[in-house]
Length: 353
Image (cartoon, rainbow, N blue to C red):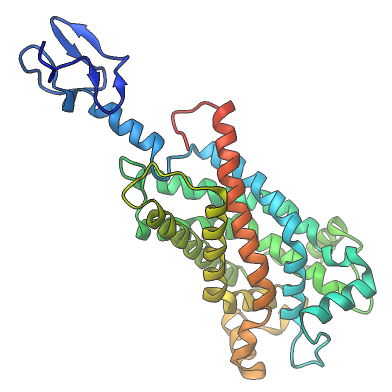
């Protein structure tokens, strides 16, 4: 038998699915044209090679169910680690120049909070974010995988432009379904703590009082700003993450990414999103605070901030947000990847990461 027509694939070793049929070697996934009674090697296992490339190379296709579960787990763990930085950022953004500023900076905010409320004060409003972070991350990664899977090539690679669009879609979905009501409750609970006579005794009491006074609509204050913020957030993060991943892997889609590399890329993506959309975050926070009734709409809020406090006010809380977001995105991406790998061992699907 000629060495050009052997019953195995050069790239994969013996082709266990190959079968002899009427004097010719065929593979269920192959549709090559027979020559001299045999199927040539380069056609014989083309389907299998493509499947192997998608299964072992690049950013592999992830089952949406795994993405939702892994995203939820990663989001819950992450928020418990990083919430104090979110608390400080929110307090600084609510501390308007129009009134005598209460805080002189990050350290002063932490000092006064601990002094007045103890260490637990830095976790005021955590419950609203914890209850929301799990479904938020689940929806984010689930939506991204649903949108991106059909757009990937045969090796599982996603180009940068499409990653931007998929990230935008994921951000809008999480903004409407989870982030807007979650953020509104968080901001109101944190803002209430600054009052001389706080009204809310806890998360559930606060939710009940807010809905009783303002209806469900009260939990959707600043929806426009939130959609703009979250949409741009995830568009930037997934774009930068995908850009760095593609650069790192280069022409070798099988190159593995160490969790430390994933963390560094995630932190970089988080930093890019902070500098890219902190002004939207400031407007969103003001629209969701207890003084939101002062603004006619999102545009009016931005105009009043610019008029009364100057353009620098749009970057209030940038430093604490930078620390929180870089840590947040790094942790979430690492946890997400590792949890999906774990799920692949116990949950068998047609898609693998």
